Length: 148
Image: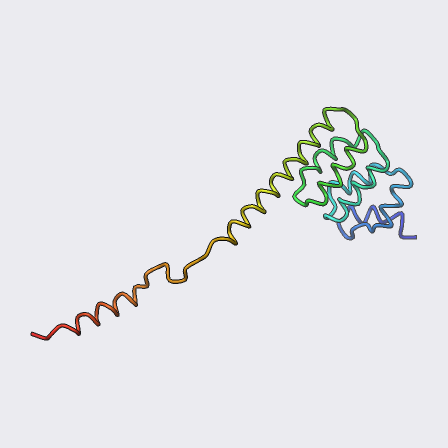
């Protein structure tokens, strides 16, 4: 009974569609609902929508998948790239997908190297000079001198 109203409630931002609902949209080829979920859903909904669009393989959703491949959430980006690769509209698109994956790999490697370098550094706790210690030492030296 609530199934027909789920998309309306999703559009009103009352609820998020469940995995079962997205599977139903995938089975009924409701591409417009899946595209709306890809644009406006939370990260889990966007990921499921991209995976559903991959299975449907409709070429009209390629621009939205390209936009979703630049998503902040890494899982959504991977799902969108997998969908684009499965649709395989043109060779140029596949080349750009491969370049993006290599760029991700390089950034992950660079972050791991930076983390290793940070772990190798040894920090000296007393690297800085405390002003209180310096003034205390100065007073001690003055007290050692004879009073005139």
